Length: 111
Image (cartoon, rainbow, N blue to C red):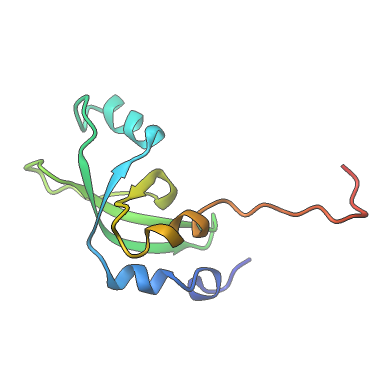
């Protein structure tokens, strides 16, 4: 189990310093928001307000709002379900940091 979020993802503090950040929902989150009639058929711009490490699931989570909507509801989802704006300073690092950890099989490991 990972004891601290800084040990797991050192770039998390850099991402926090550059918040709020603009993002778009990836297909699973987009489908969820549409099925709950939270958004329409278009993909709105999301505003990431906070990021944090969920130790229980070992995932980076984020709090976000939907731009252009009058209600100021805050949603929580895994950061992997959002695509940061490509111009954001942490966008390149985010792709590798939020990818699921894959176990590497050793030479002697049986499959």
